[in-house]
Image 1 (tube, each protein chain N blue to C red):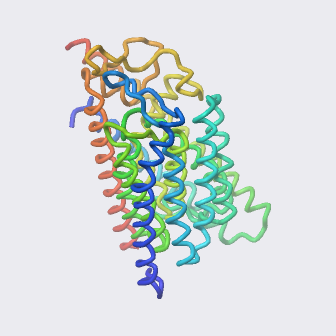
Image 2 (image 1 turned 90 degrees about the vertical axis):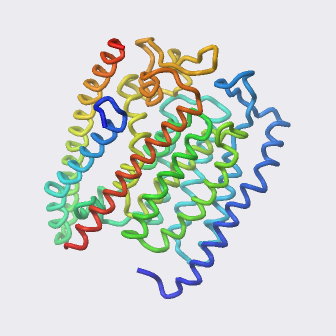
Image 3 (image 1 turned 30 degrees about the horizontal axis):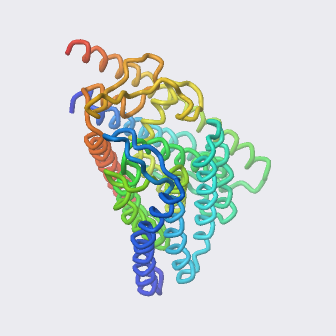
Length: 84
Length: 337
């Protein structure tokens, strides 16, 4: 599979989705375990808010990486076309 | 795990799926005639002589899906089906509005938030989000996630409806990993309720494949996206569905990152592709034109409509293979645990 193949783009997206899943497991899942034990509704709300902030940050990083990759991919693709 | 009366459920599912399929096969030709007679036709611009094609096919698609799902509801008593039916119907109504009146770009995503509410009311989602390497307990966070998921999937599916048969064929391909994931990690009832939709898609593909006899319209694509998203949530297969839909997500991402705002594609003047005299298509050189999946495909050289459709199907098969690899990873991790 060549770098300029569209399947490579999809493969890259898959890899970052899997990395995001791992990040969620390490960052958000422990907070979830803490939530199960909680009875205090304010603490549940606070923990959910922290979970939301972490999730937004992970998605933000994911979009940033994808945007960077897209620019490199398009640049290489257009250069390749010019060579042809 | 199989419920005790699973044989009855399986027979009911087979009947519901056959009825869903037959509704499309029997009623669609008459509906095509009805739309043609009433002048509900649009131009198929990518073909010689610009043939007029009836639109929308969404009403018969909805009828077929609802009939199948209601049969299953009366057999299984699985009340989440009602939530999914309401969500799909609201998405269909939003699509009908957009079919007959060009709405601003924000309309579809904003209105689809409304469509996701029945999923929350009927508690189609669980409190644990399945994320391949384990699950996360997010009882409150799941609610905004559902409210975001349906508009995202609905619009993503809607955005790939650019050529004959793409959206239906692509969804048929991506249903395979979703069905497998539901069978392995979801409730058995959810697997059963996915089958009438799959049968409807197969029936509709007969009329939508290249060269199309009918277009689904926004009413058809939004309802397909909404029900696919609902099944992903109900079967705890959100990540598997995201991976299967990667080519469509890539299309939306490329479009949004180049246009930098939520806008209705009909409102963009610079077209991403150019139709040549021989009816082949090539990528636009206009810098202001949005970047789309098709424009990227055409950077390698001009292609016919049918060749582009096949390329997108192949990308769908590739992303579905990645979905199956992800299912295997999740299966082994679950077994190790």
